[in-house]
Image 1 (cartoon, helix red, strand yellow):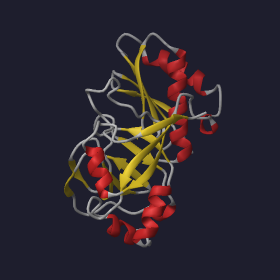
Image 2 (image 1 turned 45 degrees about the horizontal axis):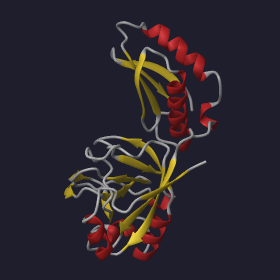
Image 3 (image 1 turned 180 degrees about the vertical axis):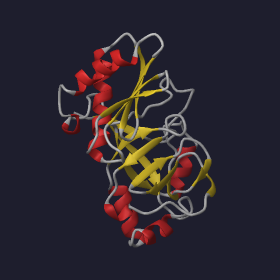
Length: 243
């Protein structure tokens, strides 16, 4: 990974530590692990941290705190270990989310299967059998990007937008899932539908997923999905602690 990790200012609001120029498992794990290490350092100048697909963002007022000071501190932390080989932080969860893959609620499952070179049954088995990781949250509050899927799912985005998929929609492209927080347009194919809401301001914890959490899907019927949609915003989701 040439020229990485590297540290750069983000305007006057903070610094980004970048571990790769494109998404990879190693760069994403490094970003998540490094963020946890910055949090553990508990530097008073740092007001917030976040991780992206390949970077850690460290929020610091660079008017009050010189960039060079924070750059030196972050560089020293980078040199303490090989972050690409770092383990993921503790406190992670394995979530099991009920998900309907029936055509009536997942209207592009067959199209996505063809793009992946699979039958519909093979596609459902592959997607429901995949255990993915929350690689980042973004675009909408609490909305997770999940990866990385098998190579067959390195399918492109659509050339046109689907005008609207509902909240709880599971969409796929480029070896990743996105689980939609709210109804919105997408260029990814709609292959599953669940009742789990990734963001609910009425919950004690509005955003329950965090980068590093792992996700698996339990296939359900349209009737079971209808029942879950009449329940709470967790939509039948359960979790267990990861070691």
